Length: 205
Ligand SMILES: [Ca+2]
Ligand SMILES: [Ca+2]
Image (cartoon, rainbow, N blue to C red; front, side, top):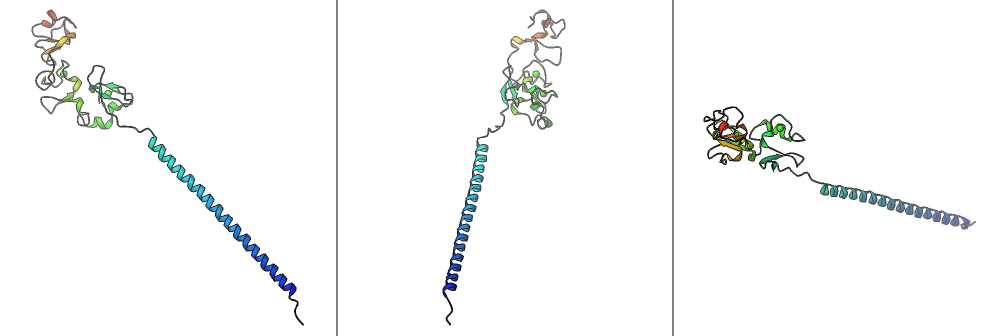
Protein backbone atom coordinates (compact mmCIF):
# COMPACT_ATOMS: atom_id res chain seq x y z
CA UNK A 1 0.00 0.00 0.00
CA UNK A 2 1.44 3.29 -1.12
CA UNK A 3 1.70 5.92 1.49
CA UNK A 4 -0.29 8.97 0.90
CA UNK A 5 2.42 11.54 0.24
CA UNK A 6 0.12 14.26 -0.77
CA UNK A 7 -0.55 15.61 2.63
CA UNK A 8 2.90 15.00 4.17
CA UNK A 9 4.48 16.61 1.14
CA UNK A 10 2.04 19.38 1.44
CA UNK A 11 2.67 19.61 5.18
CA UNK A 12 6.46 19.58 4.67
CA UNK A 13 6.14 22.26 2.04
CA UNK A 14 4.04 24.36 4.34
CA UNK A 15 6.49 23.81 7.17
CA UNK A 16 9.48 24.72 5.02
CA UNK A 17 7.64 27.69 3.66
CA UNK A 18 6.75 28.80 7.18
CA UNK A 19 10.31 28.25 8.32
CA UNK A 20 11.58 30.22 5.38
CA UNK A 21 9.17 33.02 6.12
CA UNK A 22 10.30 33.09 9.76
CA UNK A 23 13.93 33.23 8.70
CA UNK A 24 13.12 36.01 6.27
CA UNK A 25 11.27 37.82 9.00
CA UNK A 26 14.11 37.31 11.42
CA UNK A 27 16.63 38.50 8.88
CA UNK A 28 14.49 41.50 8.22
CA UNK A 29 14.25 42.16 11.97
CA UNK A 30 18.00 41.78 12.40
CA UNK A 31 18.69 44.08 9.48
CA UNK A 32 16.21 46.52 10.88
CA UNK A 33 17.74 46.30 14.36
CA UNK A 34 21.24 46.67 12.92
CA UNK A 35 20.19 49.66 10.88
CA UNK A 36 18.57 51.19 13.97
CA UNK A 37 21.69 50.55 16.07
CA UNK A 38 23.90 52.06 13.39
CA UNK A 39 21.56 55.00 13.13
CA UNK A 40 21.57 55.59 16.93
CA UNK A 41 25.33 55.23 17.07
CA UNK A 42 25.67 57.72 14.27
CA UNK A 43 23.47 60.22 16.07
CA UNK A 44 25.44 59.82 19.31
CA UNK A 45 28.74 60.17 17.46
CA UNK A 46 27.46 63.26 15.65
CA UNK A 47 26.37 64.78 18.97
CA UNK A 48 29.79 64.10 20.50
CA UNK A 49 31.60 65.63 17.55
CA UNK A 50 29.28 68.63 17.59
CA UNK A 51 29.85 69.09 21.34
CA UNK A 52 33.61 68.82 20.97
CA UNK A 53 33.66 71.32 18.11
CA UNK A 54 31.45 73.69 20.11
CA UNK A 55 33.74 73.47 23.16
CA UNK A 56 36.80 74.10 21.01
CA UNK A 57 35.16 77.09 19.35
CA UNK A 58 34.10 78.52 22.71
CA UNK A 59 37.59 78.08 24.11
CA UNK A 60 39.13 79.58 21.00
CA UNK A 61 36.93 82.65 20.94
CA UNK A 62 36.65 83.16 24.70
CA UNK A 63 38.22 86.45 25.78
CA UNK A 64 41.76 85.74 26.86
CA UNK A 65 43.21 87.45 29.92
CA UNK A 66 46.32 89.07 28.59
CA UNK A 67 49.17 89.76 31.01
CA UNK A 68 49.10 93.30 32.35
CA UNK A 69 51.82 95.64 31.19
CA UNK A 70 52.34 97.61 34.41
CA UNK A 71 54.11 100.59 32.90
CA UNK A 72 51.91 103.70 32.97
CA UNK A 73 52.05 107.45 33.53
CA UNK A 74 50.79 108.91 36.77
CA UNK A 75 48.61 112.05 36.91
CA UNK A 76 51.89 113.94 37.59
CA UNK A 77 53.32 112.42 34.40
CA UNK A 78 55.83 110.19 36.17
CA UNK A 79 56.43 106.48 35.72
CA UNK A 80 53.79 104.52 37.61
CA UNK A 81 52.37 101.09 38.37
CA UNK A 82 49.20 100.05 36.56
CA UNK A 83 46.68 98.28 38.82
CA UNK A 84 44.70 95.18 37.83
CA UNK A 85 41.78 97.33 36.71
CA UNK A 86 44.08 98.59 33.93
CA UNK A 87 42.97 102.12 34.70
CA UNK A 88 44.44 103.18 38.03
CA UNK A 89 48.06 104.31 37.77
CA UNK A 90 49.74 104.78 41.14
CA UNK A 91 53.12 106.36 41.92
CA UNK A 92 55.93 103.87 42.65
CA UNK A 93 56.27 104.81 46.32
CA UNK A 94 52.73 103.51 46.89
CA UNK A 95 54.07 99.99 46.27
CA UNK A 96 54.60 97.74 49.27
CA UNK A 97 53.93 100.56 51.73
CA UNK A 98 51.35 98.60 53.72
CA UNK A 99 48.37 100.54 52.33
CA UNK A 100 46.06 99.28 49.60
CA UNK A 101 46.33 101.85 46.83
CA UNK A 102 45.14 99.61 43.96
CA UNK A 103 41.47 98.56 44.09
CA UNK A 104 42.49 94.89 43.98
CA UNK A 105 45.51 95.31 46.25
CA UNK A 106 47.99 94.46 43.48
CA UNK A 107 50.36 97.09 44.88
CA UNK A 108 50.76 94.98 48.02
CA UNK A 109 51.18 91.65 46.22
CA UNK A 110 52.87 89.25 48.62
CA UNK A 111 55.33 87.88 46.09
CA UNK A 112 56.31 91.29 44.73
CA UNK A 113 56.81 92.75 48.19
CA UNK A 114 58.69 89.73 49.53
CA UNK A 115 61.94 90.65 47.79
CA UNK A 116 62.54 94.36 47.28
CA UNK A 117 63.63 95.85 45.02
CA UNK A 118 64.33 92.72 42.96
CA UNK A 119 60.65 91.90 42.36
CA UNK A 120 59.71 95.45 41.43
CA UNK A 121 59.49 96.66 37.84
CA UNK A 122 62.98 97.92 36.99
CA UNK A 123 61.73 101.25 35.68
CA UNK A 124 60.35 102.12 39.13
CA UNK A 125 63.63 101.64 40.98
CA UNK A 126 66.47 104.18 41.25
CA UNK A 127 69.86 103.00 42.45
CA UNK A 128 71.63 105.53 44.65
CA UNK A 129 75.28 106.54 44.34
CA UNK A 130 75.97 103.70 46.73
CA UNK A 131 74.34 100.81 44.83
CA UNK A 132 73.48 99.07 48.07
CA UNK A 133 70.76 101.67 48.51
CA UNK A 134 67.77 102.28 46.31
CA UNK A 135 64.65 104.43 46.24
CA UNK A 136 61.49 104.59 44.15
CA UNK A 137 61.84 106.76 41.08
CA UNK A 138 59.23 109.26 42.28
CA UNK A 139 61.55 110.03 45.21
CA UNK A 140 64.18 111.32 42.80
CA UNK A 141 64.39 115.08 42.21
CA UNK A 142 61.76 115.79 44.88
CA UNK A 143 64.08 118.07 46.99
CA UNK A 144 64.28 115.39 49.71
CA UNK A 145 67.52 113.53 50.42
CA UNK A 146 66.05 110.02 50.18
CA UNK A 147 69.33 108.27 49.31
CA UNK A 148 71.10 109.84 52.26
CA UNK A 149 74.04 110.99 50.14
CA UNK A 150 71.98 113.37 47.95
CA UNK A 151 72.72 111.25 44.88
CA UNK A 152 68.98 111.29 44.13
CA UNK A 153 68.96 115.10 44.05
CA UNK A 154 72.30 116.28 42.70
CA UNK A 155 75.10 114.90 40.56
CA UNK A 156 75.34 112.63 37.57
CA UNK A 157 73.17 109.84 38.99
CA UNK A 158 70.01 111.86 39.29
CA UNK A 159 70.48 114.45 36.52
CA UNK A 160 67.82 116.56 38.20
CA UNK A 161 66.88 119.90 36.68
CA UNK A 162 67.66 123.04 38.65
CA UNK A 163 65.47 123.97 41.58
CA UNK A 164 62.93 125.45 39.23
CA UNK A 165 59.74 127.13 40.21
CA UNK A 166 58.98 124.66 43.00
CA UNK A 167 62.33 124.90 44.81
CA UNK A 168 64.66 127.47 46.38
CA UNK A 169 68.42 127.15 45.95
CA UNK A 170 70.47 127.55 49.13
CA UNK A 171 72.64 125.62 51.54
CA UNK A 172 70.14 123.90 53.80
CA UNK A 173 70.54 123.59 57.52
CA UNK A 174 68.71 120.26 57.56
CA UNK A 175 70.35 117.07 56.39
CA UNK A 176 67.13 115.97 54.71
CA UNK A 177 67.63 118.55 51.94
CA UNK A 178 70.47 118.91 49.46
CA UNK A 179 70.99 122.09 47.44
CA UNK A 180 67.33 123.07 47.22
CA UNK A 181 64.46 123.25 49.61
CA UNK A 182 60.82 123.02 48.59
CA UNK A 183 59.51 126.53 48.04
CA UNK A 184 56.56 125.63 50.27
CA UNK A 185 58.96 126.01 53.22
CA UNK A 186 59.75 129.63 52.44
CA UNK A 187 58.52 132.27 54.89
CA UNK A 188 57.14 129.65 57.27
CA UNK A 189 58.85 131.25 60.28
CA UNK A 190 61.58 128.61 60.50
CA UNK A 191 65.14 128.74 59.19
CA UNK A 192 65.88 126.16 56.46
CA UNK A 193 68.80 127.92 54.72
CA UNK A 194 72.05 128.95 56.46
CA UNK A 195 71.74 132.48 55.05
CA UNK A 196 68.07 132.76 56.07
CA UNK A 197 67.23 133.45 52.43
CA UNK A 198 64.27 131.14 52.76
CA UNK A 199 62.69 133.60 55.17
CA UNK A 200 63.80 136.94 53.75
CA UNK A 201 64.27 136.48 50.00
CA UNK A 202 62.24 133.49 48.85
CA UNK A 203 58.62 134.02 47.97
CA UNK A 204 56.46 131.21 49.19
CA UNK A 205 55.30 128.92 46.41
CA1 LIG B 1 50.37 100.49 48.71
CA1 LIG C 1 64.76 112.74 46.90
